Length: 267
Image (cartoon, rainbow, N blue to C red):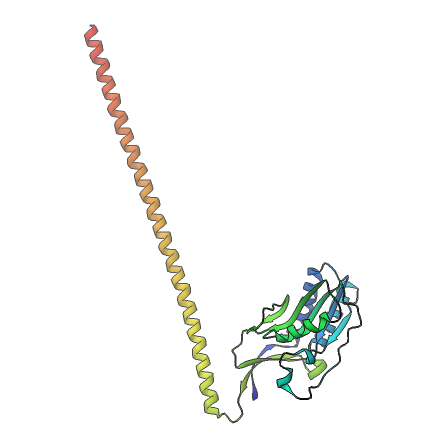
């Protein structure tokens, strides 16, 4: 499979601002940094956790401990990836028992990586709470896992992927939306796939617009009916008042005639 970069989702400045915002959100949600630990999921979750820790220290004045998890041996597809998988270091020097642990990763996809990280983290103790912070959420979840702090939501197709590059691991800060292409596929096939995807997006846009127009028409009809009902009620009230006035006048005339007759008899 080859990766074709299609668009830049986040540049260096956007990555920096996003991590600063996430740092503020983490502190605000946990009402400070007391009992807080950041744990990055290798590979790129670790430098992200370290950056968030430095950002918190700048505005809060306190350093938040940072740990690292390598979830290779906890993956549910370990037997399928390699006979001799490369295992990195897991470094958590703080006791996680009764602490708030914030797992940090670069991209949230199916949720299986986070599931493995949760299994490994529980082996170190019993945290009071575990929260999840990710730089990008691209959807397509396969497990009931949701991030508490999301830098950016990036909707993707199944044949697309999100590449996160960091200075610590790749020499630059950049997030790309890329496309997975099978090796050997011709330029004509690639172009056809792009055209199909463009048509699908246009159809979704048309359907969305049609849906919004239909809603607008329904609202307009409802307003028209409401106005008609209001007018009908007003007319009914007017007629009722007119009838009441007519009856009152008739009664008054009848009483006046009766009084004049009574006077005439007395005379």
